[in-house]
Length: 281
Image 1 (cartoon, rainbow, N blue to C red):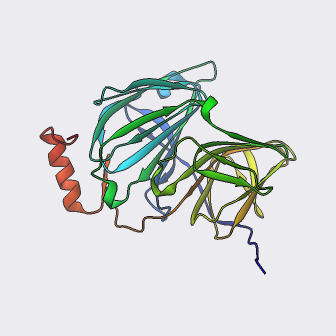
Image 2 (image 1 turned 180 degrees about the horizontal axis):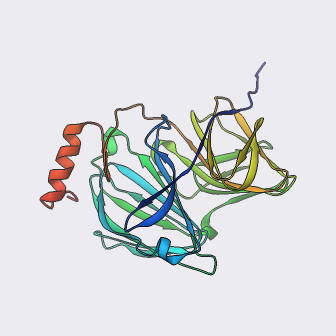
């Protein structure tokens, strides 16, 4: 007989105020600690005050990671050394596979509700860290949805299965660590039950509150879930969350600023490559 295990909240941590780029005020949700492999960092950008974010993220390098930026309100314009230039708006996402090196900028746009966006860093496996750089943007209209039971799931990437067997697959199909990223909205009295046995499963509640398993999660908190094969999101008053599912690389991580490698020697090489102009190839 097959048993079914409901995943519960194993740990809960609040986001912390911080800043990045050219003085952009953010909430740092996760930053390299806590063993959330393959997810290295997660930031929330959100303000109705342009002065809090308008400086944006001027040109800077990366090596060894992927980034995923998802916009709730406002927008961001991306430019890089590969001549990619595009703007994403509310509901859109942009994905960047930095591989051996990329130099890019992200400059914020605003709408009537200001700016609200997320940026996720995913670690590349050692075998991929020196691969060619790639970039892709995805519009919200390209993202499939599961709707029902007073809830909606929008899949940015990965395979997501509802308890009734309905499956959607997000358009970002090359996320590091077989990553899955989705946006869940649960109305008052609604419930969403999803099947996944991904070793790393995270829920970040960014609006309202959600009950995950037996735990109430308020806005601004990241939950790591226990092992199991399915999990449930419910709410008495409504809430929204970012869902992250992935498979750990279980490899050493060496981190310095925008570079993430497997050893200090590789970090030193990345710095030399950037300084002498050979980072990107």
